[in-house]
Figure 1 (cartoon, one colour):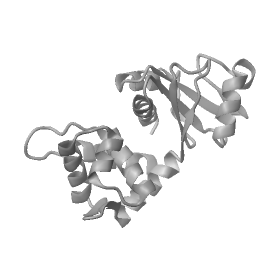
Figure 2 (figure 1 turned 30 degrees about the vertical axis):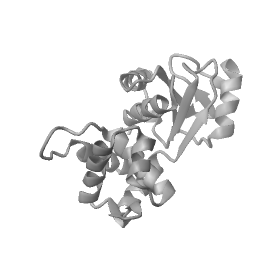
Figure 3 (figure 1 turned 135 degrees about the horizontal axis):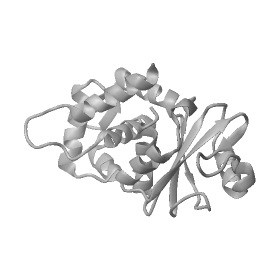
Length: 208
């Protein structure tokens, strides 16, 4: 399946061994780097370090790993995705096609909230606790998992009908994300935008 292929590729990239100390980046830094390069087309090393919030040495190691794996090509102008990199990014988008910022609501846990759409992953959701715990482990205040099932948006252990119980939050989500049957939305909430992103990615990772 596409999901397992993507997860194995990213996990392998994050675990590859190299001489010297262990790199201070994780699988979600790699995911975000690929996303940033894909969306901008060409990204300088300094810009990438700033966007990811990591140091120059760390970003050099990260780029080196992506380059050695044939995912990124580098030039004087910056980093770009190779054909292999573009194919990986397309696979990622098949699984997680949308990422949106949502305002704070009575459904979220903090000021900054990032929602990710996961296609057809409702069968992987139980109580939403695994996603919450994963988000918290990466610095978020929390995460909530929503499932679109039988035409309703459901939050396990919270609400069996979000439109009824959290109408404002429901309308915000529906206006921002196009949902289809068996889709899942995870919302990472944190005190900073960066931690909200990593919380959402960590939550989504448990469902890939």
